[in-house]
Amino acid sequence: MSRRILEYFTAVDTDIKALDKQVDSSIQQGYEPHGSPYVIPGEKPQICQAIIRAQDLDTMNLSSETPL
Image (cartoon, rainbow, N blue to C red; front, side, top):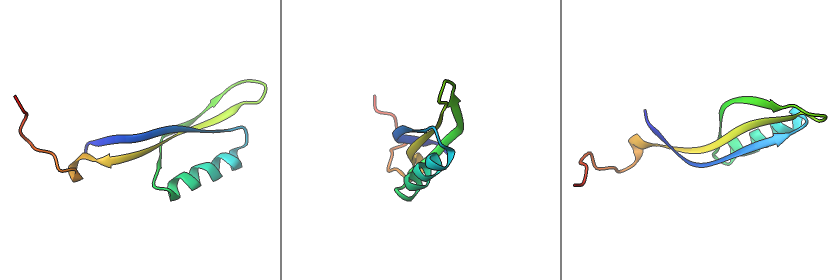
């Protein structure tokens, strides 16, 4: 199944519970996590999660013919 990413952003926080709330809120708005969370090291490490809104290309009305 092919997918097209319509929107992309990164949820970022220094607290895992706060990041969970951001991700949960995004899911309720129709987004989904993409890939694994990652950490940006530093004095206050930032926990990050990519968030996307995607559409299955199978559900789009696409012609199977390629225009010349």
